[in-house]
Amino acid sequence: MDAQQQFRTSLTTLLDKITLLSKSQLETQLKGFKPAEVHTIEFIGKHQDVNVTKIADAMFVTRGAVSKLTKRLMARELIERYQKPDNKKEIYFRLTPQGRGVFLTHEQLDQEFQQRDQPVFDQTDPVQLQTVLAFLDRYNQHLDHEIEQHHLQ
Amino acid sequence: MDAQQQFRTSLTTLLDKITLLSKSQLETQLKGFKPAEVHTIEFIGKHQDVNVTKIADAMFVTRGAVSKLTKRLMARELIERYQKPDNKKEIYFRLTPQGRGVFLTHEQLDQEFQQRDQPVFDQTDPVQLQTVLAFLDRYNQHLDHEIEQHHLQ
DNA sequence: CATATAATGTTTCCATGTCAACAAAAAATA
DNA sequence: TATTTTTTGTTGACATGGAAACATTATATG
Image: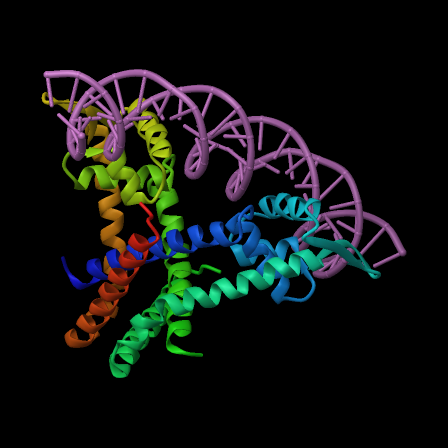
């Protein structure tokens, strides 16, 4: 297996595992909340004047999905909607006190995830770590180039 | 931003870009096939004596989901089932000629993606490349440990 | 200013995934 | 060997996300 294939395989399994782990922990600590719901609460908690379209863009899902999701979250009184006096089209969301509770729990969990993986970073030589990060940066730059060439975005 | 955060950010954007680039090509060349379907065909094509449980483990989904997926693929005559004479419980899958067609198309697309990104790997010092791969391996091993500790899978 | 176009959010239909219960067979255990 | 436990695969109920059609409002254009 050449380097690129090995890289891709490692990356894929890495992300599958991270997803699996965060999902289960989220489910135990935030029982009754789906990952997408928590993610939405997190996004609303971190940004001002969030609407359906912004959430959809940030989460890489359709507006329809977000519309349903926010409806559920409002029914459970975790978020609430508001509008601005000069715009009758856009609908914004903010957290309710209950929603802020979920938000804080999630923040704590996120710190736990970081702590869970920190040993990997601590036990790696700083120079090697920089090599890894630099490589990812170069790869990202290359893809930026490709995206530009293919006239995407 | 610390190393872990930088690593996470780079990884996320890297994958977003890869998804964006491969999306349009996959849609034109493998029209009518869902990512999960192609992924399953790929897995069956690459491994011997694959059963529902193995696919589920490899794709991080439930056995129920795989059971339905393989049923669909069999209905479309892309895969077929077989058993071994000394085991009446386990059911294995292999590709049909049509399934191999899809498999090959996917392989070719994959090669195109590889060629697109090969410059990044060619222009990286082999020693540094090994550092990157070794880091990912260590990270994966760490997560394997975590998954085991949480009694997942 | 009037009209065309774009943006925004919702809903319906549909596909697909999870969960949980289940049956059958294999493996472990007494 | 007989019984219990585990493994394997399937199914039905349910939830959820995508696609597309739609209504409403904002923005661009003439």
